[in-house]
Image 1 (tube, rainbow, N blue to C red):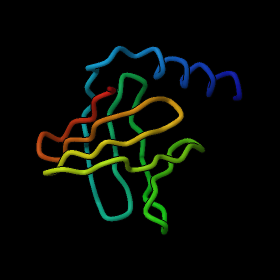
Image 2: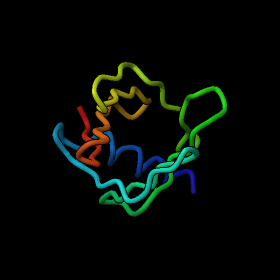
Image 3: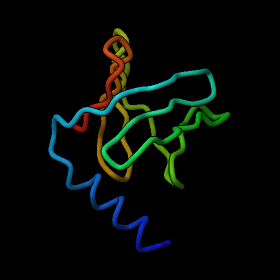
Image 4: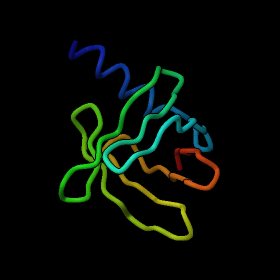
Length: 88
């Protein structure tokens, strides 16, 4: 299991800038995203941060429905208007 998680993490880290993922569902408590690796839920924590596969993401900035999020796997832009997530 640990090896599989490392492989997924490395695959995401190696993803080129500009790669886009599709948002399937968004609620107050979670966001479901389709990725090349499958469908995943990103959960909102009580403190306002988000968690996914044991990692926590922090919001860097927000402007007009576009959120910049920093994680241990890289920095991502979440565009709620276009329903996309892009690795920066």
